[in-house]
Image (cartoon, helix red, strand yellow):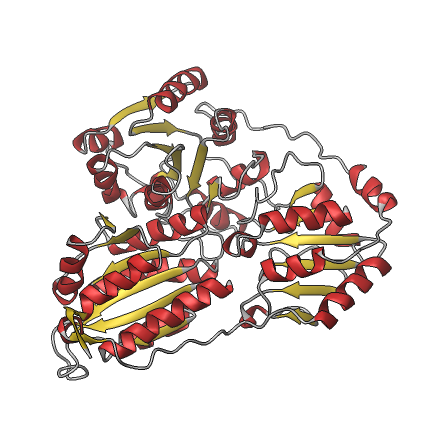
Length: 528
């Protein structure tokens, strides 16, 4: 039976039913029917100025909310511009629904205008890439993607929708496919895990961001309280339990805290919950006695792997009695203390770490930070204490330049009480500088801070370490203040720490767009 809605309108109706409130995107010829359906819907479309920025915005929306982020682009160049952001989300397991328009099915594969094999492009950087050749295929693709999200499978799903399919009437009488992919936890697995915990003298939890996407913070807190097992986190999962909690040892692995890495090195049992166990997370682990619980099968890194939703797994194990006696272990961990770090370099310009330490002094519970790749993440990792999940957003697994500003845009749509501070470098800023237009258009409470050394600093440091001459790393930057003013954003050059503290405090209080350009010295970052 046909409906009075075309497929594009039915698609938008399905998105509404699945609770989608925002779509980040950029229109084009092959996606116009969906844009017309969006115009008449209650979903708010946020017009970015580049498709890469649309994905980064949807990505940070998902990281901050725990919900699925949605982005949208046309065929050909529009879809290809999405790939950087989709790959970023894929490496960090961020739940995204990526929608692209495509040329009509009757000319697909005939080398027509803007025709590219988009599903072949997106396949390696998504959990699944669908080609919706019919209205029925589109509905089943959306249902399957959201069933994965409901199961706790996190990562991007791509649906490619030909323009003629978007205009077709929707058939609501077809068979709708419903399949649960992730099995419920086995009782035998729960019993085995309890046995191994009770036999362990030095257990350790490593928690990943899958805890957020499964909405399992409450269950994790109950499990920690029940067992008293110390917890460490991956980089992206920092703050799922406040780092002011003594049971949270902080970041583990590369750039990890002394307590966390001591615990990782000496643990006789690792409980890896909602984490893919990347090489940076496992850099200090010595035991092979690892139990991993994860919904993504391709992240099966442990000999004991349970392909379960972590929320359901924790709910079942929390029903059981668990006896632990690990006070000697926790006392040993607590003896490990960080050595105070001193900034050794004497510089004529401001030292970047001094600047970042002062930025962090202004951070409270209603501040969210987004940071770019390069030298900046090092200082934010070393010097910060994170109080809530997603308080510092960073594209960890891929690390593209240009993430900070579009990520800040996405964060504003789910953290309305927060001031968002995007900290970027002078190189990274210019990858997505056009998104200042979005900040101005929507009057978003985003403060952009440029750590400006007129240099691609991390690349220069690599050249120095390999005894190579400096090559193609010096930047002749534009006047960032004038550019910000051209976008109707108030801006200041900062030349002292006192000025930074005064003006940043004022900008946070005002909750309106602002840009600060801070000239800093070119100094090498401390190595791990």
